[in-house]
Image (tube, rainbow over all chains, first blue to last red; front, side, top):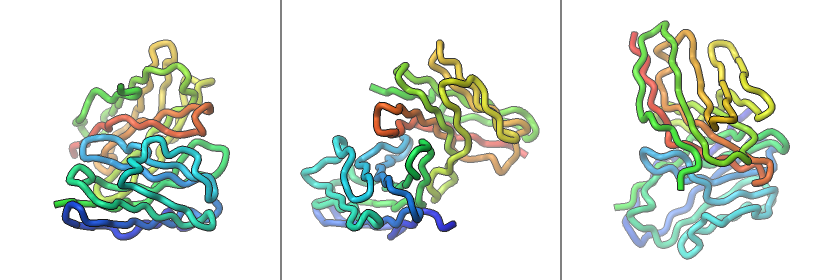
Length: 113
Length: 113
């Protein structure tokens, strides 16, 4: 079974530029999450989707971050404009309905200079 | 307000000995508890979990203990192997929160040969 795919793996941009991350969850997983992990901290939830609907985006900085999950499969997370404090690893995870266990992709390491 | 705390940022253990990683949580509404392992440049990998109706769950060399009255869980690895060297995150979930997970800050385990 293929795991969660993410791209790109690494991205370096200057502040005020925009960036987009892509995630393809495990086939059949209806729930998809985006997390931000800052160095030395645990993953922090940004947004949760159920199929193509948003379940919770209360921790998403909506003035600069946006996310969508068209057709209930792939998802993109965008930052526009980026700030220095957005430097982090952005993780995508998916979950089969029912169990709590989430399965993570390898993440995208973003560096904002 | 940290709901999940891993107070030891790092732990070193000799190969073959027991590794004990600890995690404390504050909210008694949490009813599911998980441990994830993370290698550098990879996403977190699910390791083992326990629900609030149990106080122990074993899977091979890994055992998770839950003390609900103390709001404390621990992960025991016996015997520890060099390949176990990784960052370990505890995560907690609640059926009342759309099964979202809240992560601790992680403990870097180093198993010395």
